[in-house]
Length: 48
Picture 1 (cartoon, helix red, strand yellow):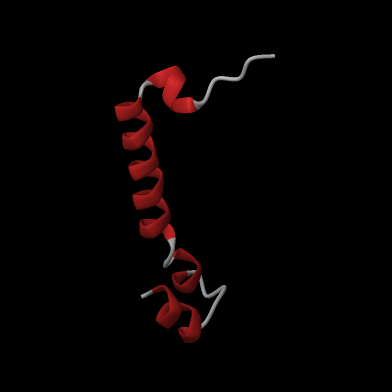
Picture 2 (picture 1 turned 135 degrees about the horizontal axis):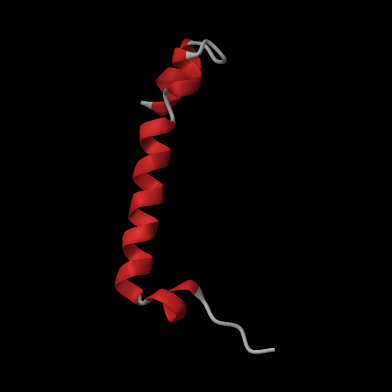
C-alpha cells in the first residue's frame, strides 16, 4: 500500500513542532533518573 509520512499527514510545520516538543521533553526529563537515585553522579555529568 501507499505510505504517508507524518509530515505528509499533518504538515511539515506541525511535524517539525512535534519533533521539537519531543526533543525538549526528552531533554527536560533526562535528569529525572538521577533525582530518583536510579543513576549516580556519572550519569548526571554525562547528561549535562
